[in-house]
Length: 380
Length: 239
Image (tube, rainbow over all chains, first blue to last red; front, side, top):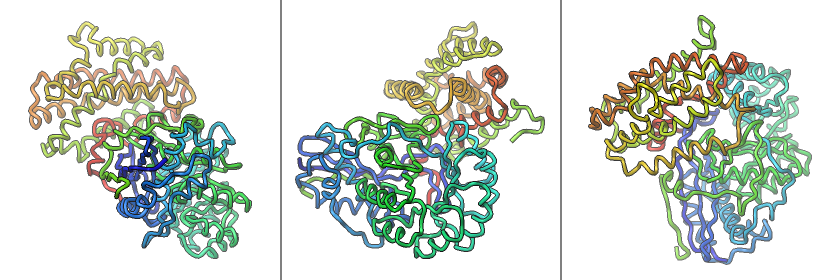
């Protein structure tokens, strides 16, 4: 099996409503999807979500990196058989990108596409490479930034659809009032965690978290900007609220440093951020081995491709504390797969059992939703 | 969240009014009215209206099946009217939408739009249920139907004028809009009463009902249906 062609799509799918946090506001999905085709005509799809404030990639640099760095090094080469995740992942070369922490969104998009293609050609589901430990996954709700009244409205809506794990975006002047109001709306039984997206200073983090201790916060995600882990470790010792790392955890090296510094209680593992399934699995396993909890996170505006991969990852780990994503058409005006990946009541979603990633991507939707398309062949 | 008189019905009506105001104040709607919308976006708007309402009879049939006794007669009447089977109707409403498309020179898009409308309906059935039971599904669906009746009774005349003036559509093609501007003031008032009857019959608390109505509408149900792809073309903002 050799890869003979690829198509890279820069998507722009509108959201049904805006999504904000302390670092950005989004009104549409800006994922980059890679379709690869092998010499038998089998296709596979992968997706990456470039985030300048996470990996340092943009849609433009990701597009260029895939076309000029990654694709030329896999095009026309024999792809390993679909028997081993690490061999397939190693098929995608190690690359660097100037100005970026790591070109992980690019790598994730190509790795997922290669996995999907190889598994489809063999007629096997991803579970062949990543055995499943559970038959369904339960997703968290996420309350976006905005006025307190809107956050309370969202909290009530999440309660109405039975979600029991809720994440609230913080990092604003009204954080204490915001969290207090949302906790009141959710009731005492819901699990509530916070995400500051690195918006707090050390002193502000200590102040806010001390003010919220009595509200039963399950974890606070990325309270400080990505930076020296000693600062994070010091904050962890200063507050009883468990610390989850996200932007601080991009590479396997980051994981090792964070564990050694005892700077975190939870790892937030996201496939696009961590560079694909194989590396995400390695980071999650490192965290679990060190006694940390693991959240399988998502990208705001991700399509069914990343959602499907995330669901597999969540179902294959021996333990998973929280799972995010699979909003599907709750957020996107249109998703790219035939099957709906959106979770249902209580956030529950079944495991996807079809070949490859377990979904059927509709190419026509990619073409219609693309703002840029690049065709690549083995000769390029 | 509660209004001055504190009734659920008035609170929902205010919610609808705010969404209508948001629709008519949106850049997309104003461009439609003042003629600055690009020709292909007028076409997209017409197609979106058609897709949003082509299968309304099926949705009304579903709601009739769930209707509490106090609302059954209204919903039956609305269903028959949609189907062109009541005493006052001359034609099924989906036929008026087909005339709208043909009048705009978009008849060739009908099969695609019918397929999309069918898929929208199919999705309601096959997608995982967000809610605990049919009781909640019915309230969310009824809230959306009544919200559109409320909006169309106030805005469809303006839309018809805009499409007539700037897109050159003849009156016959605009009958779906002009018809709604005449009949939906009554429908909207009935609809609000039906919503309240549904809430009471199925024993929702006011806060619970309001939350579900808000979920049906989200940021703006009208722009979500009628301007579904405009943001992708460059409107809005993102950092």
